[in-house]
Image (cartoon, rainbow, N blue to C red):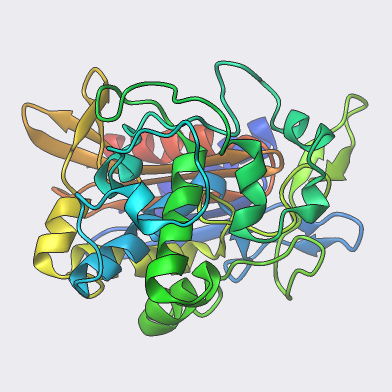
Length: 341
């Protein structure tokens, strides 16, 4: 890895798009990381490699790992049915919905944020104030009485509500709150010491505020744009390094059994031409070979992208506390690495 060339290219792209966040690039032999912008505009606090960022749906692999741990413990199977596990009422849900289908977005359950119906995530909180959403069960009124979107197992449809349901399954089966289960079984166990499910109105030190650009070019925080507490479908806070620790443990069979790891990393359903979904993340597949694993997350004031290349061993993680920019940065990194091979 030509660090000087990489830094020159990323610096230029950062200036072009005014990126704010942290970039981490790891090869088999080296690691490069650099941070840009402010974690707190008012106090003029810079982002650093120790800054914690919300990663929105980049959290879904962590939820999938929590479910997989329960499978390893013999407390769940992929074919277990959702309605056999939860006590809450879902009057229109199909009895056949399985854990595997929820993990792969093929369950057909209704979503609380359906991108086919609404464009703005903030629309959700008009009827359901975001400051009241602090437990997984608080999400249920947003979707539990809605009708199924499709028959279970028939088609892929990206679904946040499905991962809320998976979090509720973790709570029911383990007997402890979802965030506590993940903290003990994943974060503490792996040494992800800066990660956690935090409340937006009670953030710990070194946590970046998420910023949304205003029409006049200024910024406001995302305090009134997201649920008060991060949940099992998105919103966990991490450092870029912690996400690298998570990935290394996952592919190294240090978190899950070999069988569970293989199932996690298998392309289960095709979402688009050449792009598949496994457990909690996407994969780009070419001639039956996985070219890269992809994690991504988008929320108001949050932008996250990560790419893990199994053949070369290159890992790229980009965390941002703005609503966009991570895709442009990770694309620049990939192109630069390809040019300097």
